[in-house]
Image (tube, rainbow, N blue to C red):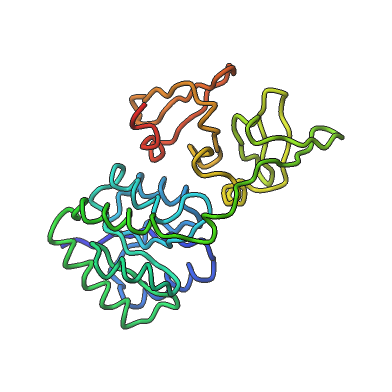
Length: 258
């Protein structure tokens, strides 16, 4: 069997480096083809690299590990998933009855060795059981959390020249990352936020605002249509606006029913 290839997704830099170091020691024949700090970049890397296994932190800004794992069923269905999580009895109970492995932080060498053996065994068995994985993801998604009872952000303040504007989230068509800043696009024009895109995702209503590209979050209420291109990417048209937005291939699953 040829060397297995892996992607590591963990938003905390020190923990990510610690896992990479431990993988190099325990699984020297494992080839790391990507390490990512958020769900969006992880999904793009997974789609491009088609790894054999993904070590996926459950709690990441923007797309969570659960959302990435669900999207992987379309963009990289043969990839195994190993979830990485802090101690959480609800998640552990789900994993014990699920189709994937998990690692608890802080990750121990013996546990990683056992996980690596199972990854190798499953790699020879073929494609993962998608139905069992989906059942696990649904169970994890249904978990009640304190965050689920926190009302989403309704207003934000942004700069427009020398003026500071109060913008209702309903007025926003989309957000565009611009280096250290984020541009807010509304019917009244552009404004600038000092909040990075990945932090903004944590306070927006996830049912309304969806990431469609590493640098773009769109208000789904503003979407008029999406056309799938031959490349697998999408071209998104907005209501009442002339510009179109690019949808990265991994995020096209959001528009499956359109």
